[in-house]
Length: 329
Image 1 (cartoon, rainbow, N blue to C red):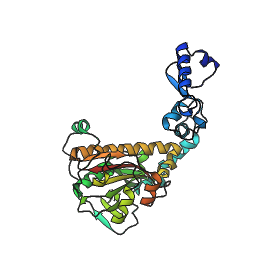
Image 2 (cartoon, rainbow, N blue to C red):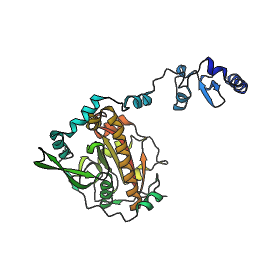
Image 3 (cartoon, rainbow, N blue to C red):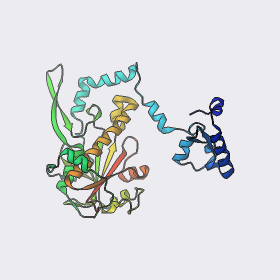
Image 4 (tube, rainbow, N blue to C red):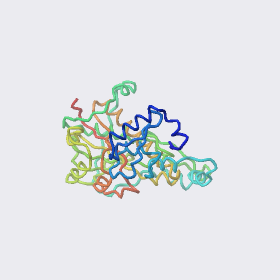
C-alpha cells in the first residue's frame, strides 16, 4: 500500500478523528502512532526509528518503511519466468546419460562411521488413510515411555523408505539402470533431504544421533549419547509446552539445497521445502496409525542446531524437526 495525496484525500472524517485521538493518546510513543486509512489499515510511520521491531510492527509499516523485506525478496527471486533459457538448459542437462547414471547412484553415499544398526522390517499400518486423516493431531506432551525399534523403522520408512525400482535406458537404449522410488515425492527424483534421528528412548537402540540410510535400511551412528543434550538445548520451547525430554525420538530433516538447485536454480529451494513438508505429513499419518504422538517443531535456533549436528548450515542445513513419543493426552 502506498500513501499519497490521492489516498489521503479519501480518508473519511471518522478515520481522521480516530487518528487524531490516537495521536493524542499515544503522543511520544513511536510504537503506537498509527495513521488510519479507510478505517481498516493502520500504518506505523515510525518503524524505521524503532529499535525493537516485532513482525506485527513490520507488517504495519510495509508501505512506509525502508526495512529489508527478505521473505518477499525470496519469492520474487525464485519465480519461474518465460524465456528463461538458462534455466531450461539446466533442466535439459538432467536428461543425459551422465546424469542418469548419477541418479542411479543417488543415495549410495555412506555416513562417516563404522557403527551401523540394521532396522527391522517396518510394521504394516492397519489404519485406513481416511481414518488417519480424521484422527491426526499434534501432540506436544509425552509420557516418557519407550517406542520399539520396529516402530521407529516404520516411521522412517514412511518418511523416506524405498518402495520400488524403476528402469531407465542409457546408451541409446542398449543398457538399463535402476532408479529407486521412495515414499515421499522429490523434485526430479533428486532426494535433497536426508533424515537424522536423535534417539532418546527407543527400545533396543542406544541413545545418540543417527543418520538414516534408506537404501540399506539401517541407521549409522554419528554421535554418541553425550551429544544428545546439546541438541535438545537448541530448541526454544519450554518443557511445559513441548516435553521434548520425554519424547522417544527427534526426527531432523537435513537439506542439501544445491543437490536440487543445481538443476532448478534458486527455485529449487522452494521444491526442497515442499519435499520436507510431504515427508513430515507422511510421518504424521504413520504416527497416527501406530498410536504415537508427534509434533512439528520449527522453533529451534538454526546456528546452534547445525553446530550440534556438525553441519555447516548452508551446503547441509537443518530444515525441519519432528518430535515423536507416546502421547500423554
